[in-house]
Length: 214
Image (cartoon, rainbow, N blue to C red; front, side, top):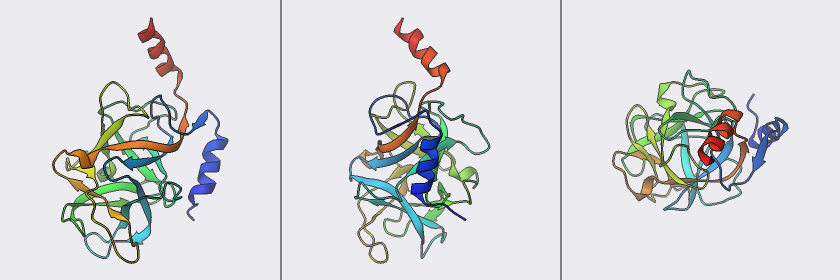
């Protein structure tokens, strides 16, 4: 039985070593975040509503409401890899984003998206386990994915960029924007961490930072 986003957030907080909100510092594995598409001002969202075409998998959309409970995603290591809780995510590292409310992973494949005709992005798997098509590479400048930076997510298998271009759904998800994969890089591809619960970086990262400052 799946747990909703609120009980899972409580469980994350109970782990300790976490901080709320945005601010500076690296995004770390185990953190739970909301991701904003910078150009279209919508947060990456999912829900137990399936596409009526294409793969028929769980839909992924963009929503404008900042307080939406279905826009939380957990940052995890790529498929079959371990990323320890609190380990900073490096630029160029492949990760999974697991939807907190349904336990499915951000996913893409060679299906056509319903509105724009780009590549479909869906949520796939059960209890956080899907397949290699759940892996996304974090593209950013510097060494680590910083909370206050704009980044892109490139699908590790098909090379498309996670994007929003403004197409809007009608019923039953009226007003939500299509999220899809685009073959080309553009301003529609940039995302920024907004609200979240961040696992504190481990000792290795702190030692690296101390060495850099010397």
